[in-house]
Amino acid sequence: MEKLQQLITELIEQAELFQATLSNPRKKDSYTKVEVKPVELKDGLYYQFSYHYANKVIHDNLLPNGTIGQVMELVQTKFRQVYIQAAKSDYQVLISKKFKVTILNKKPTRQQADLTHNRKKNYLIEEGRPVPFLQELGVMNAQGKVFARRFDKFRQINRFVEMIRDIVPHLKKQRQINIVDFGCGKSYLTFALYHYLHHLEGLDIRVIGLDLKEDVIRHCDALAQKLGYEQLKFQVGDINEFEGLDQVDMVVTLHACDTATDAALEKAVRWDADVILSVPCCQHELMRQVENETMAPMLKHGIIKERFSALATDSIRAQLLEIVGYRTQLLEFIDLEHTPKNLLIRAVKGNTAEDRLQSMKEYKAFKTFMRVDPFLEHALEDVLEPMFHERV
Image (cartoon, rainbow, N blue to C red; front, side):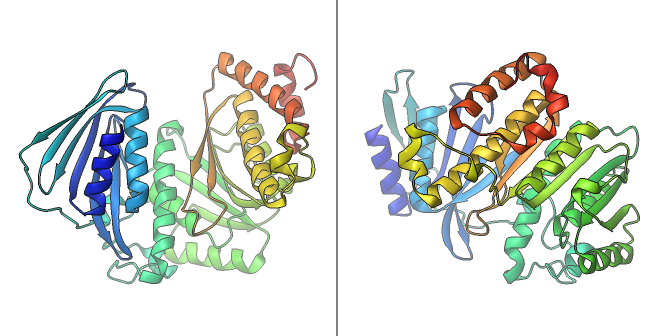
C-alpha cells in the first residue's frame, strides 16, 4: 500500500491526476464504483468523488490532502482495482485478497484534465432554471442564477431534496400524502419539500408548517399563497399540543431544540408515520446525565462531553426508532463549516422483528453502560413495553 500511497500523493501534489476509477468491490453492498477527478471551484482546486449506486450517483468534493486519505481508505476497505489516468502514464492497480498491490504502467490516454464543474447536473433543483420559491426567498434571480452569497443555502436545499428523493418509494401514493414540518422557521426547506414532491415528483401532498413565531408564520403563509402552493399551509403552534391531523405520513423536524425533537419523534411514532426526517439541535438532556468512569478521560472535558452527549443522544433516538419498527440512518446534512448541527436522522417504516429485538438488546446495554434515562424512552413507554420483557 505504501507504493500506491506514494503514487497517489505525487500525482495530486504535482496536479497530474486526470481521473481515477475505483472498481471491483470486495462486497457489493453499497456503491459499486467511485470516480475521482479534479474540479475547479470558486475557492480553488478540489477533487470530486462520484459514488455510483444501482440507481443514483452521489457526489462529494474534497481538498487535495483529503483526497489522498479518502482514496487510500477506499482501496483498503472497499475496492480491489484502480485505473488511473495521469499526465505521463496510465496506471492499473490490482489489490489482492491479502492486500498485495501490483501497479502496471500503461501508455497515457489523456493529454489534460477537464476541470469544468457542471454544478447544474449535480443538483435536483437546477441552477439556471428559474424556480419561483427560490427567487422569492432571495436565493436566485429571475434568470435562475444563484447569488454567490446564497450558494451555501442553495447547496443545503439540494442536499435536503436528495434526502427527500430517497424516501419517495416509502410514501403511500394511492391517496393524498400528509406531511407535517415541526419548527419550520423561515421554511426554505419546507418550500423545497413542497416544490420537489408536488411539482417535480407530481405527488398529491398536503404540507403543514408549524412554528411558534407568529410573524414568521404570517410571512410564510403569505408567500405560499403568492406562489399558488394551495396545499402548503402554515400555523402557529407547539409540537406538544398539535392535534391538527389524525393521519400523518411524513414528519419533518429541523433544529428543534433539546427534547422538542423527542416530542416530534413521539408524535411521528404515534401517527405511525411512514417517514421521519429529523435534524436535532441543542441536545442538553444527556449532558446532565451521562456518567462513566471508564470514559473519564473524555467526559471530564466539557466541550468533549457536550459533543459526545449530542452524538449519544442521536444514537439513542435512532435506536429507539428501530425498536418500534423503523429502519434508521444517521446522515450528514450539510457541511460542518456552515453549522455544527449537521446530522440528520432518516427513518422509514419496515424494520423486521428480528432486527427490532437486536436493537432492543443493544439499547439496553448502551443505556446501562452510559447510566442515562432518555426522555424519548419515557415518552414512548407504552409503545416500547411489548418489546421489553423487563424494565430497561
